[in-house]
Image (cartoon, rainbow, N blue to C red):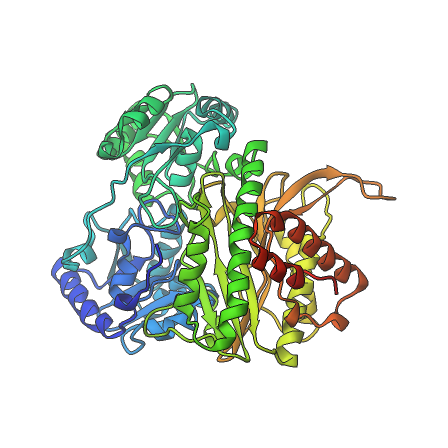
Length: 604
């Protein structure tokens, strides 16, 4: 499963490939083209044949866009990737911009010539995204024009074939609710919302609704497909039928009508011909789908994917499964941390060695299906690159006197994990201890938060940042993202961030991961997953309050803790957390690792 990315870290490829793309655009009569990091499902992970941004520029992050015009080009990445983009992209060919602070729409307004046609693939942009880009092109005096076939695909000579991995039913013991019951529940919501049909384009929604899983994209068990859900409870699945074996067909045959994937267009036409009101999610649905529905005469209703919120609220079986997954995962991670403590001070362990060893410990559980994302294994200055991915060219040793940041996760059938630990290799300095402890204070602030129903992640985000703010410090990423149940490690709509406006509800799983990054020196992040708990009384209080149960079980490096910066309550939380970790993990560990764990989780 572990892989490195030397082929995409060659900036020299970008200039030649951009030139070939420009030749194709000129042949078609276009001045420029938009290249998002997306496929037709708008998910975070895309199959190899859809890694168009990576092929063109060398950038392999999970979010970004390039705009290639006749005489200039730019690449847009968010705050997680501002350092990474400098290493992977030819900045003489592509000007690097911040995706949020300097968005593509602004750059288009300033750089698209009057009268120019800017092309885009309508399968690769959402309805909302196209609206913003169209407005920008028109403000510049140009026009945004959809293409029937992607011009980049025409010059990508060795483009891989689309995936067709087998679809597997997801057992009811892990799903916790039969697919037929989910379909009836969501269909009834459609009826109350005055829609006849919903178009489902997010593969994780389809996987959840029909209790199926696949292997079409890296690290997330998704079967790439589309679906229609009708208000009468009838569902249709559009998928490459070569993915379906006898077991999957038998499972689906009881709940859904299966069609070839290329039959979606004619099904949308039929909805239009019947004058149906069709729900699409403008934030995730490809603009091609809305255009096809409108042209066919359907009334298009824009609204949230009807599966997104129900999927985010985990049922009892899913919460129990993720607890079991975290117990198993915590034992594997603890074995790894004990191994690092013994081996790294020798100066022989590299970032790649560490990532491979951690995956091996997880594989030894016998339950590992995949890692949940490419392991971030960053030593020293590489740890300051928020979403760093090690290559043979960047691989560093874990040197004594430095910090090592490892952010990793696993996919088990009963749950998805995501955990970050920052480890001192040798004795840390006072600055590192100070910064780490401020991050820890923020982590504890989230872990211990109590809040009324209706509270959003945006309202909690400052809890994680306050100790850093007091020192004039901050971090340029959200504090927490939603996590699926043997699905995507990044799941909406819940999140803890300045933009996280979805109220948190019992059963939602989110990460708690404040951090601090000093460019050229080190990175710090402490991440546990937490589940929102049901309303409960607070002693002496007047209202019921929600809270968080920490799911992740793994030691936090005490060598980096400056106790004098912690309050009594924070010390009590850390000691109680470590006592819980020790009690839960020790029975499944060998004697040597158990001895290490006893010391690593001692009370301070």
